[in-house]
Image 1 (cartoon, rainbow, N blue to C red):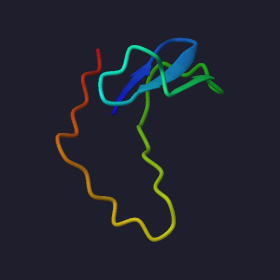
Image 2 (tube, one colour):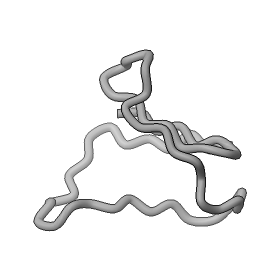
Image 3 (cartoon, helix red, strand yellow):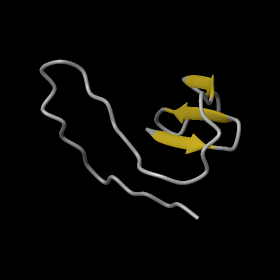
Length: 55
Protein backbone atom coordinates (compact mmCIF):
# COMPACT_ATOMS: atom_id res chain seq x y z
CA UNK A 1 0.00 0.00 0.00
CA UNK A 2 1.14 3.51 -0.79
CA UNK A 3 -0.35 6.47 1.06
CA UNK A 4 -0.16 9.94 -0.50
CA UNK A 5 -0.87 12.92 1.75
CA UNK A 6 -1.45 16.16 -0.12
CA UNK A 7 -2.46 19.59 1.13
CA UNK A 8 -6.16 18.74 0.77
CA UNK A 9 -6.54 14.94 0.81
CA UNK A 10 -5.20 11.51 1.74
CA UNK A 11 -5.09 8.82 -0.95
CA UNK A 12 -4.37 5.10 -0.41
CA UNK A 13 -3.21 3.00 -3.36
CA UNK A 14 -3.17 -0.82 -3.09
CA UNK A 15 -0.76 -3.07 -5.05
CA UNK A 16 0.23 -0.29 -7.47
CA UNK A 17 -3.33 0.02 -8.77
CA UNK A 18 -4.02 3.24 -10.73
CA UNK A 19 -7.38 3.76 -8.98
CA UNK A 20 -7.31 4.73 -5.30
CA UNK A 21 -8.70 2.24 -2.79
CA UNK A 22 -9.41 5.16 -0.46
CA UNK A 23 -9.55 8.92 -1.04
CA UNK A 24 -10.61 11.27 1.76
CA UNK A 25 -10.49 14.99 2.47
CA UNK A 26 -8.02 15.96 5.21
CA UNK A 27 -9.58 17.00 8.50
CA UNK A 28 -6.68 19.28 9.47
CA UNK A 29 -4.67 21.81 7.55
CA UNK A 30 -1.45 21.35 9.57
CA UNK A 31 1.61 21.08 7.34
CA UNK A 32 4.02 19.70 9.94
CA UNK A 33 3.92 17.45 12.97
CA UNK A 34 3.85 13.79 13.85
CA UNK A 35 2.53 10.84 11.86
CA UNK A 36 0.27 8.25 13.48
CA UNK A 37 -0.60 4.78 12.19
CA UNK A 38 -3.76 3.32 13.68
CA UNK A 39 -4.21 -0.46 13.79
CA UNK A 40 -7.19 -2.67 14.41
CA UNK A 41 -7.80 -4.37 17.74
CA UNK A 42 -5.63 -7.46 18.11
CA UNK A 43 -3.26 -6.43 15.31
CA UNK A 44 0.40 -7.13 15.93
CA UNK A 45 1.36 -3.99 14.07
CA UNK A 46 3.86 -5.72 11.77
CA UNK A 47 5.16 -3.67 8.85
CA UNK A 48 7.52 -4.46 6.00
CA UNK A 49 9.35 -1.89 3.90
CA UNK A 50 7.82 1.08 5.71
CA UNK A 51 9.31 4.25 4.17
CA UNK A 52 8.58 7.91 4.86
CA UNK A 53 9.47 10.24 1.99
CA UNK A 54 8.47 13.61 3.40
CA UNK A 55 9.61 16.94 2.07
